[in-house]
Image 1: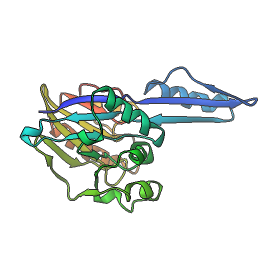
Image 2 (image 1 turned 180 degrees about the horizontal axis):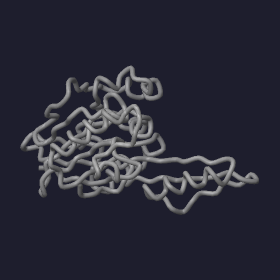
Image 3 (image 1 turned 90 degrees about the horizontal axis):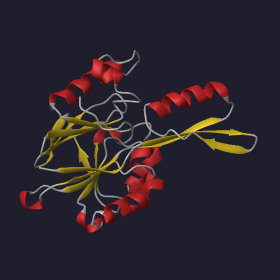
Length: 234
């Protein structure tokens, strides 16, 4: 039985540069912020976006062999905020057993630079196209590599391979007091509409996404925490 706590909620910051001035949109939630970013690209010549994911703390009962885990610590600029968020809950690094990554994109993994802890990720992430961006940070950690398509990471904490965003993306399913919460990374987003309809947008990853969404639903979750959306009931 895990307590599921969002340490740092996801945010998107769309910005533009005009006349040597940087303007940042006030709206920072997704999917609204993503839609605003798309509009801004049509209006101004220099437009960008910074985004970071939901960083989640899973606190288990160690007397039952349940670990305490940080899932998706985020961008490198989040390394200190993650530590402070833990401290605000009375926790230090010694209280955390490992970091778990839904996938190894830099916006989910690079805050590991200040988390000298073992890192759990799927073997298919290692050597993927995005791996060189995070390799230096992650190879400095003890890697606990998941293999195959599903398994149990710890008592009450299962995982399933859910590609579609990256080859080795995984979904974690944690038993909590209300049932099961799933943490599925970026296979859902930037809105949840397609997932709720179970109709992926056409593209080369559509078939993988549909299989992955079915695996997510097979956990029968009462709560879904995707990478860049507020948590929701499926």
